[in-house]
Amino acid sequence: MSATVADLVAGLREVVGSAGLVTDADQMAGYLTDWRGAYRGAAAVVVRPGSTEEVAEVIRRCAAAGVAVVPQGGNTGLCGGSIPDTSGRQVVLSLTRLRRVRDLDPADQTITVEAGVVLRAVQEAAAAAGLLFPLSLGSEGSCTIGGNLATNAGGTAVLRYGTMRDLTLGLEVVLPDGRVWHGLRGLRKDNTGYDLKQLFLGSEGTLGIVTAAVLKLFPAVRTRATAWVGLPGPQAAVDLIGVVRELAGDRLTAFEVMSRQSLELVLAHASGVRDPLAGPHPWYALVELSDTLPMAPLDEVLETALGAAFEREMVTDAVVGSGSAQVAALWALREGISEAQEPEGPSLKHDVTVPIGSIPAFVAQTDGALEAALAGVRIVSYGHVGDGNLHYNLSKPVGADDDAFRSRGAELSRVVYDSTASFGGSISAEHGLGRAKRDLIADYKDPLDIELMRGLKQLFDPAGLMNPGAVLPEPP
Image (cartoon, rainbow, N blue to C red; front, side, top):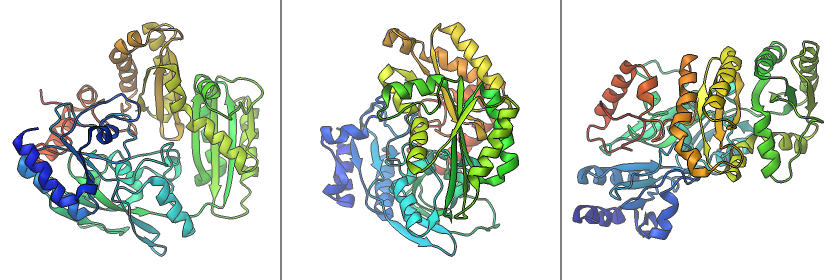
């Protein structure tokens, strides 16, 4: 450790105290690799400030020393955006001690929380007040609001409530020079110029550190109806969502779709699960309606929609969940897909979006191109068909060598991304760019977009010390 970095570490201890500083190698290890073990780095120190003021002072001292900062929340991301490089000179700034719920206003239907609050804790605080915070992710028990904001998280309820961009009213942000932008306003209307908070949402800590947010709340859901549906293919899913929308309107909260391969992995590796239908189907949909009325006839609405879909041969079988336990079991099948891939060896994760109507053609084209590139590759495709977002993941062919599959990773990802681009889609729907896609994005985004993004980076962070190596590709 150089004298400059050693002096910085000593100074940071003065700011956050011994409890806020992690220097032991074993204790640091969990901050230096992602949960999948796909990204590993090194750091001079891990700093865990306990307040916005401490975050600001940490940033000021790092800026003065010319040391880069990598912000980190729950470390549940999939693109390596919260992992430092291997130089050992960067500082990991963990926000997990910023975990206060500062305010909950039932009249305004807002909640103000710090960046380190776990998503499930926000959901529970809202529920205790008879309200709803609708963001729902498979990692909601460990991901933090700061990470959700940094990546503009989406989840399963985007169809009705939108992404974090739609759910956020105000932010508090520590800028790269240590100043604090006090944008924690819960106003629904503020037409006084640029909407600055949107610059930080989805920026993955490259423009500043979000320390708190004002989030929207909604009336609590009192009635739900959930169905697991067998489908002949992805075109049936696109057709079915139209039928359900016609009858249910905005009561359609979630419409998840998954391939048979996805379900087979969950059935093979998750405990306590079973196939809800009598026989296999090529594709499945998980459809959920919700209403604030305690006795809303949602089962009738859903059964009517499914009946119409049966008549038009969109649906081959279906079961409507009866009781909370059965509904939870249906959701467990959908939410268990990502983890169920892990026992099968290395996997490639792709988070893409295409126009909803293009999903069937996209799947057919991409499946064919991948099979031609690597015979037997297992395509684990699932996602939020209501907003065009597919998690188009790949597992190695049965019995294939792990290293041989990894060596084909870049080539196979290019197949997926080239196909996505041919349909006017995006190579990152909700996971962000991180380090995984920061160079790829230059091939799939308009050069003017990249130029404007670099201009914003230069304006906010001219020294390039905020999460360097994430989001923005290297200049040509």
